[in-house]
Image 1 (cartoon, rainbow, N blue to C red):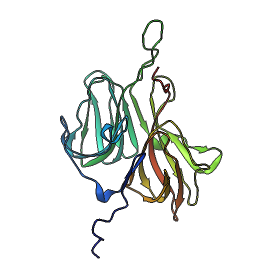
Image 2 (image 1 turned 30 degrees about the vertical axis):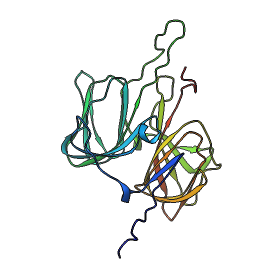
Image 3 (image 1 turned 135 degrees about the vertical axis):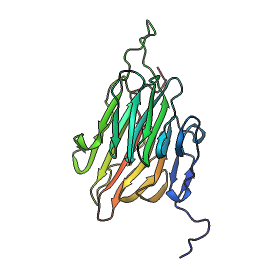
Image 4 (image 1 turned 60 degrees about the vertical axis):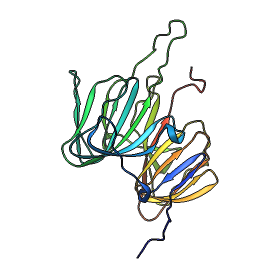
Length: 256
């Protein structure tokens, strides 16, 4: 069957983006070898962070970071080694494993085989003591496995389980969670808040309300939500729906 010409579920509005896989475009980025990137959102779209899917060929390597930029990597499939130039211990990341790299940390991601990973990057926002201007705390390298993290019922709803992949505290200025919905489960309210989101659907599907629009979504879709964008999700189908979601976190709205 020939698809309808010009048809797509993808949609760009002033406060949100739904990007379906049929509209993905792959590009190279400086410093990365053997890797193609799908840049889902970034400053040109109005986001204060960048979220990408990195598609590694065998022996593909991920570019180093600019000064002051932090990075989070969650492997979707394949096998990726994290290596440091210092004595810090690296690790082998397979599907569901992740790493957080603080700013100004020399490192390299290298794929042993064809692999895909979520890559989130943003400029780190330090918290300082007003009297001295010194940072109160500094983030550290995090290596983790989503499968080893206990899930929690969101708001007491056992049909909606959340796993917190990042530590919570003043040293870290963003959070990344996975959220899993049982068939028919839904958020208890339409949320409107100061945080922005980057969201990748990992499994299943459902209906997402973004602003005043309602969208069917499924595994592989990406969503960006600007601050204060009205948002709500309900899972549909016979299997659970799951997504990976980013939000800025633990920083004052005035930037102080």
